[in-house]
Length: 259
Ligand code: URA
Image 1 (cartoon, rainbow, N blue to C red):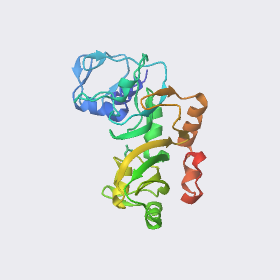
Image 2 (tube, helix red, strand yellow):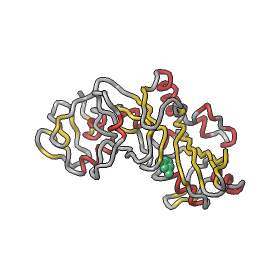
Image 3 (cartoon, rainbow, N blue to C red):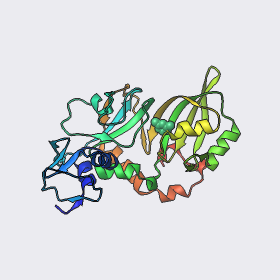
Image 4 (cartoon, rainbow, N blue to C red):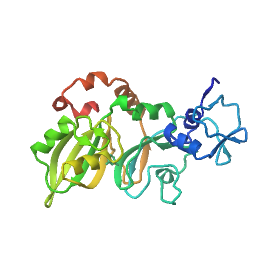
């Protein structure tokens, strides 16, 4: 096997995403041939004895792709030092180790992908892929046309301007609105921060779409299923071909395209 960075090797072994594996290395949890490695550029061939928390890791042969309906009060992570329940705890009977593709907040529910495929994770989460994510939110009050316009123009956030996004009111809950929000970034608590910026804070948040995928209505909170080959193929194609979609006007975007 040719040399590769330790964090890439760990993600290919299904230990964690590359980013999370970097965290494990920085925390001194990873050793190569008995020596703890904390250097990020460290390369391995896979012939070494590589351990995480003292346990040997091996490459996964079977690639796994899962759609879960994440419940609230569960962490999008493989482990938690505070003992909170993690999404991987909801997956029984799988011998391969999988990890979440990106994350949903502790208090967000809905469509979460899990895999042991590091390249897939990178494609799905890389900012250049600009995959559209669709959320349904109960928000305080009712956003107006001006708010919709500000979303479409790109809201100013404290970590820089957001890419143009879509906001529409699709229902009501008493004096509050149910909104559909579509963004093509994955910044920390982005939807909540965008809604705060227009003074209609999120009361409840659920992800219902990711690229070409829609949350399977048959999945109850906490349930999961494998992606079909067709779903996987369409999702990979949408991540690989963002350019034509970037040129479209926001109002011309169709929900079916996923981009
Ligand atoms: N935006 C948020 O604010 N939270 C999530 O969990 C996902 C997107």
